Length: 353
Image (cartoon, one colour):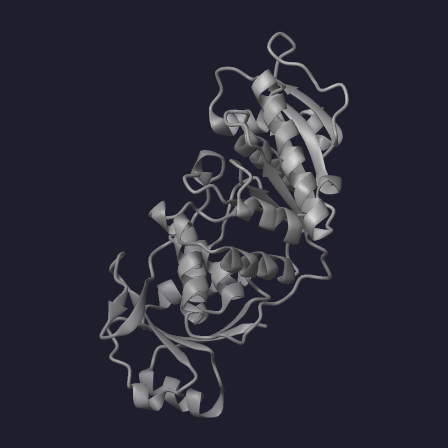
């Protein structure tokens, strides 16, 4: 679908610059109609349907002359304005990418039955990175794999599901919203989820798409498994991503088992090969086998073992691992997180996932 947007603003320099930017970056996503005269706008709305009317904040729109199903927003000169006279406001002076996402977010809050334009016929693969051992680099390996996928020109979404995780350690991109806004949308059930995902997501210069970490870490504690499942179904059903990378480690929780059973196409388990790491992995496999027998499902068949931060001086690889072994990655010392994942993404083990 293409969003049909009418813009009412007497600042022709701003409007012309905005139109040029949108036509260059989003030619297939929106159709713009431009007005400098308020009466001309109302006359046009009587003849032609638009999804959104955006007006400069100096204009006092006559709501009764705007069709009921058309959303209304103000273009504000004030950076942090959220509402003007009870109508949602968007700062007009910001990067075009952020402005586009804020317009999408405005639309998402008021439309539940609109689907984004699909890109071809893409089968989305979900890869879960997990471990019961702390400190073995699960998140850095997951982020490195996402980076590798992007380098291979795959459309990839990285989703950090750690309650206290920080996606910003690995990826950065323009945007004003966070995972908190997605969680709120899932709970309210009023928003168009696919549009909400599009408006909240950010893109790293590498091409990896992600949500910024929650504005308040407690929001992650509020996310239910059923809501997470809805989000993953939407990410897969958007027909946009080749790969969705899930990052979640810790004990064998109901959530990890839920993801393993219901959504993960492939599971990468991380261990450093220490006696502690090997012991936890073996007990992880024991627990999963019981679940397989009780529920008649195949889980270990999806699992592959990756040794990370591995040293032959302090660790050993299992002689008879119960799952396929991807390989090993030695410990990288003295690197910041972004530099680290770039190094990891070029290792043979990450490339074999």
